[in-house]
Image 1 (cartoon, rainbow, N blue to C red):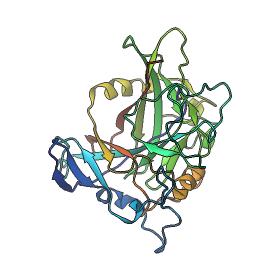
Image 2 (cartoon, one colour):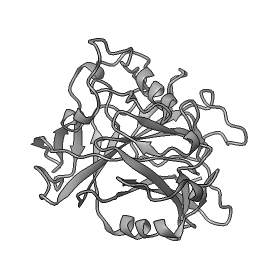
Image 3 (cartoon, rainbow, N blue to C red):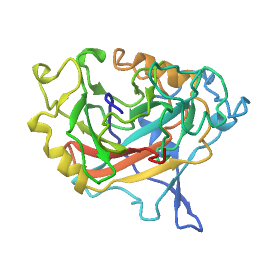
Image 4 (spheres, rainbow, N blue to C red):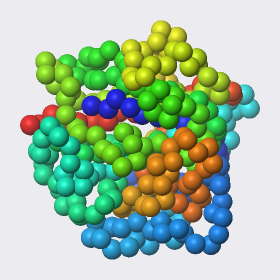
Length: 313
């Protein structure tokens, strides 16, 4: 399904707010949003999101909290290593919000989506149904870096399809893949969405595995980047094995599923990587999910993100 995407980094110290009865910990989102620029003025630029009922949420004016596993590491990293984080946000859209030719009607219906111009947030652990319309955003939460996205399909027999480099490509931002905190990349584009359906009629697709690489140095020359997605270049193949072996920790933003995409988030996606000035500030909503990895300082970071699909048809 997904054949275009982007990624990024983040470094920071966590502040643990407490441990829940289920063993999870809570951390304040502002602990790692410091790499985003501060708001230029006191207004919130119309960012307050709508809830599912269409009312304004008060979430933009309060502190945000992530839920993480009890084993989530706290405190600073070892002296020769650093924490790197990326943010991931997925929005769902109704069929009327995002009509797509040859995309079937969702098997589960539109599930109560309000018919507005904005999609609503979902957690990236949600299993999407055939025919759903979704938009994906990736954001760096600390470092500047060169972003590379690899996509491989996972099937019900536990095999993987051939890996493709889906970002960068020359037809997306002219091949520019240098990202920094405060910029957000939307896939397939700021005002578009993907149709959830299998590309392989011979097998049952259960997930897209997106492998996000963030590197302080470019890994490919401009001549090695295709106009569209290409088979994974051999020099990037090592990142697949790294993604399978290297653990990362994941956080989920509390009380935010169902919030609509804000004007600030839409503007951030519209700018993409054309304008290198950050769009999102510390007063804007944090990403719905974040992933953290520990790597030797100054080396590429690798993240493995699974977008899961409902196989019950």
